[in-house]
Length: 216
Image (cartoon, rainbow, N blue to C red; front, side, top):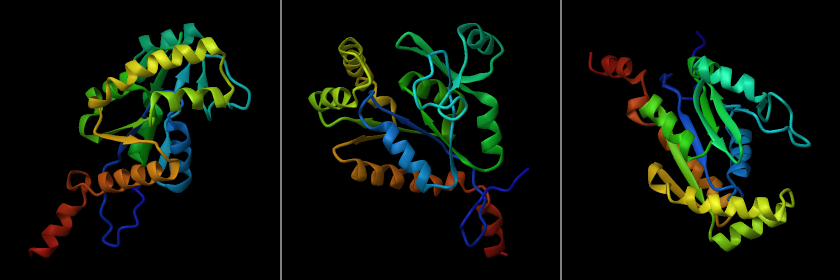
């Protein structure tokens, strides 16, 4: 098994973090996730499987694993998912095997999932999960952001806004809540949370040997 990467001068080993980012559509979660991945070499993205059609510019296996409904149902039946949910008429799920492989190699895994997925993941992985919810500064601002993206019809935007209100109601199921007034400020907050969670004593599995050496 690969040793976890570390820049700690004492060579402490630690357990990986399952780092969840959730937000209503348009609140900036995906932008923050991309910036985090570019800035954190020990962090890898969990690639979800989905039944929704591929969009222009997306790459199968990078953005999502695109599967048909029958294949998705079979993956559910075979217990291949850590979590899965039905969102906007399509199914999304996190394959279990790739996540377990990354954790075994000592890397942290980033999840871009909704509150249902976050809840399921926490029920399975408990203390290894860190849940961050990103709020928009206002619902009016969220609506403006969705319109400016120019990727959805008015009907879809209305549906996303209706769902946003329901998603925000689950804010108290998260460990941290941030307001995305400005991307850079919110991103700095997310990075601080990740750094602090990596340093938690409960994750520093290699510290016991160091303490024994100190107390000989």
